[in-house]
Length: 231
Image (spheres, helix red, strand yellow):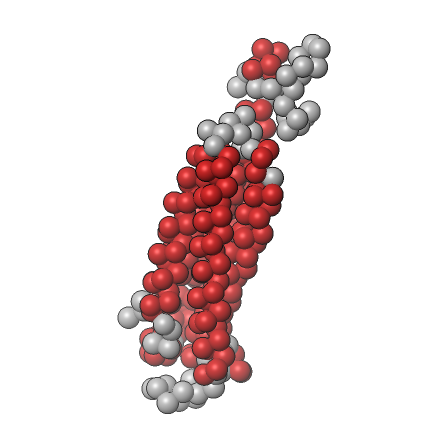
């Protein structure tokens, strides 16, 4: 990657008279391209740590399922498969709207970008609304983690810790994923607030958030069959 004065001008840096300067070009980067690449590498590094964190929980779930196979199958019947399916469709659609928002930012279509960001935010609200309904149902029936679990008539192995273990992982993993959705909602609102600053010359925040949102969606794609489709 070249760092010549010509490149500085081409990517919106300072010229000899201080003209044509991109206000979002940080002084410690030679070019806007270098600044964008560095930010993207940083985001990918962060996302790798997210995958590792959830990966550890997936391993823990697998080990516990091997210890309590029947209990995990029994417990998963208390989950509403339609709710998990709906949330899966909602998040997959939100990934598409996020792709369109990034493309709109890259092509300086600000109104279009705002529209797709609002749709993505609406999808996130729907997801959290369905999750609230599911959690409320679990609280009412006593389907809680650990010592808070209340035995159910459908428990085929009364007194087993397997049922409480299943719901401990369920609330831990879906709750952690839900926190990421809430964080994403806050970031979307920030993007909307600053939408007028994004154009074909500088759209880094939109692009980086797009990566974050796709990883959050991808994690749910694994959570859905893990909990709702156990057999």
